[in-house]
Amino acid sequence: MKYDLAIIHIDRLLPFAGDPHRGLRGKEMDLSPEIKDGAIAIKDGKVSFVGQTEAFLQLENVEIEQTINARGKSVIPGFIDAHTHLPFYGWRDGEVARGRGASYGDVIEGGGGIKLSVKEMENASDDEVLHFVSGLLNHVHNWGTTTVEMKSGYSLNVPGELRELRLIQELSRSCPVDIVSTCLAAHYVPEGYTSREWVEEIIHDLLPEVAQKNLASMVDIYIEPFTFDVSDARRLAEASRAFGLIPRAHTDQVNAIGGCKEAVKLGFSSVDHLNQISEEELEMLVKSNTAAVMLPGADFTMREKLLPPARKLIDLGALVVVSSNYNPGTSPIGAMPVIIGLACALYDWTPKEAIAAATMNAAVSLGIGTERGSIEVGKAADILILQDQWYEMMPYRIGENPISTIIKNGKVTKNQLTRDKNHELYNTGV
Ligand code: NIG
Image (cartoon, rainbow, N blue to C red; front, side, top):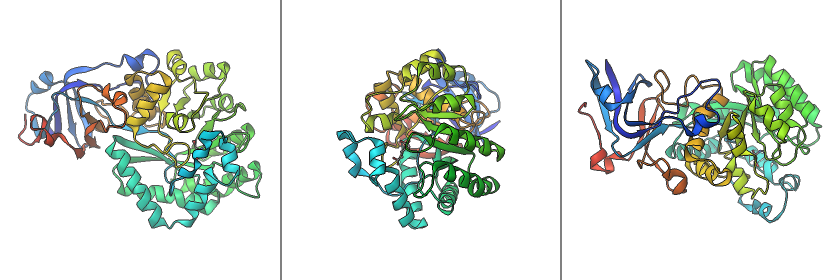
């Protein structure tokens, strides 16, 4: 067999293999197995061997185009960031006022927050948005993100939302990460509309084109007293399903108005934020396949007093995901190792739990668990070689980029190993 690339002598290989529809739950997250002196072989962009180096080297008739010696390193799957607000245009650093007591709802109603980003998006040309967002995608890739969920939601009118989704499609052709796209037209209620009127317009004028042009695979809604209520969410979800689009929701971030309960009942793919959920909702989530998406970047930036029950969600066996929520207001942090560090600090998670939530479980929440999220034979070769043998360094040295080498769909897209002659990338076979 001829392989395009082999990584051998990996000190600690963590494949995070799991059921592609159920993900890793409860203790499976922290007990996810490690292979010592591991090897991975890649062919045609896919993983075709995972095991110990010795077993790999004993295979017969092996030819390898390129070999990486990963002695002294740990290796994990590429990060899947399952919740961002990319594309956005420009920052909103002036909103630090929130830290001094202004609520998120007050900031938006005062013309800031989502409303300000809507204005900035409207005033920017396509080229400006593409240039700005390409820079951000390159940045997050350099920090280990190999797949990213992106959504519309900073236009709040039909042509603008379509434009954002088209820009996402354009970015997916040119940027180094894979993209999963979501329509979040129901991010806020535009001026002059009731929430129900805007939902109806989304259903009649936007979703048909989104579905027909394959511009998104999911439809999101922000459930809060100052945006959309549970009946809006139900109506949008039913209509989305008729177009083959999967519903998901931002819910229970600021107020508890029953969003999580309804979303789980209706089988949404995920419920995101969850600071305010009740015991009853927590138990419903645990028994469901709806992912609980934790967003520690927002909890940190918003100085949240009430954190989501993230520790309990893992302990009780929910499908738990951690994502960046990269946006210019509540979470201006796109680097997943930093997000993982925040999750460990704020939620009392172990590094392994946080990585499982950012890889395998994130893939399951996006419906791509059979293709990505873990290092398993047949899956896309999205692989990170860390700077250190200790993947545990990631949340400890928060703010340091822990990624030495990135392999995306089987190709090396970042490589710092050559800096160290003991670990250099070489071409001579094994
Ligand atoms: O997930 N909650 C709603 N939306 C975002 C914030 C978007 C923004 O402030 O621009 C969030 O926190």
